Image (cartoon, rainbow, N blue to C red; front, side, top):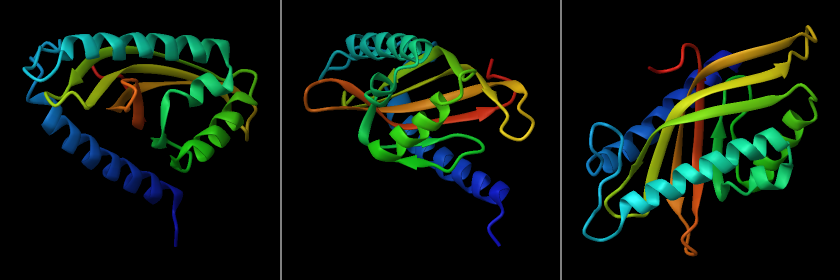
Length: 176
């Protein structure tokens, strides 16, 4: 029997394993305070600043509620995992999920980046932070707000742009 709760747990476990693998590689080059360090083969501080600026723009894109700029933050093969929804894999699935979310006039998302870490290789990075999401409950029609924590894994594209490849959030008390 496919219990939605079990599917969510499996998604979180798979996501946690992916993040753990990325964090192992990226954390080796990042000091404990979350500031990126310069690596011999690239300027990770510059990359970290670009990623942080990208997340500021991403938050503005959510405020403006325009679909294509939101989709544009993701790589073509990205995966979005969020509680209560089926994981969206690839641009088409992410676009469809975002279209459904934006159909709710009360839907909004805001987030604050607490940490950016860039791998010494300069091709992978991750961010983590806190989010607040508001949406209309489809069953009760009440507007509800959820807060929690997120991790987004990035890959540098051939053109030098940073694109999200895994975007995972979990509700509950936001991480300190």
